[in-house]
Image (tube, rainbow, N blue to C red; front, top):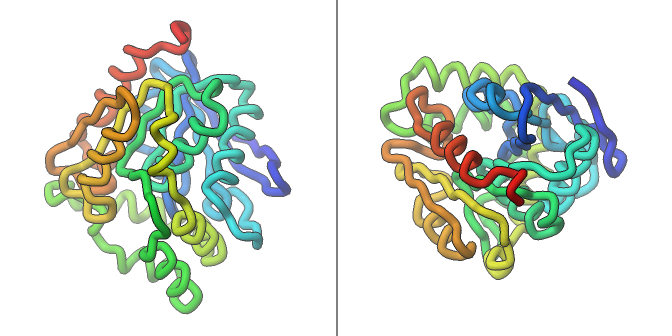
Length: 263
């Protein structure tokens, strides 16, 4: 476990395992601990790096407005700190936007992309703007509790959902950080640019996603040349939470088919 400073912000990161490097980039409001069902499944074959985005977890919460491009630069700073020039990059939800931006900013550093439960927005996101407004009046822990089970598929065991909630509520959730992240989401667009992504790409989406409808994932895959699409039946927005989800297997098979050494 370590910290790296980028753009005046201290970012917490960690790495485990050996093999080709993998960078995990989490979504809105979630600390990197929410990769807890992915991390141990990957470290047997890969060096897996995770970090807390600015505004959440053990990373700093700056006052200045955030942007997805800025958070992509944060992710590269973590790679630098870990001594990694090129990696497989896996982003979920907001993290999917961050890793899209990474592949567009510095394609030479992104060996492959996994884009989970995300989209290629083409206009400001009103929902994100709404979230940033209500966070000024409602404590973030209450807002996260109000989200209930919305992010999960119908068949996800209750104990799995409760385990996730416990991790989320135990993290350092700060209104200023969530406001910054939601504003970054609201200002981001990539639909007219993702055609320039040239690395091998896997798009994963749950067919019960109520946050980012599955149609947005289908569209995203169609916009990236050669992208592979996998839709997981019965999975919601938090598709990585299903205890029997095929996501980990799909991702590992994908990485094995596009080794960094062949790039």
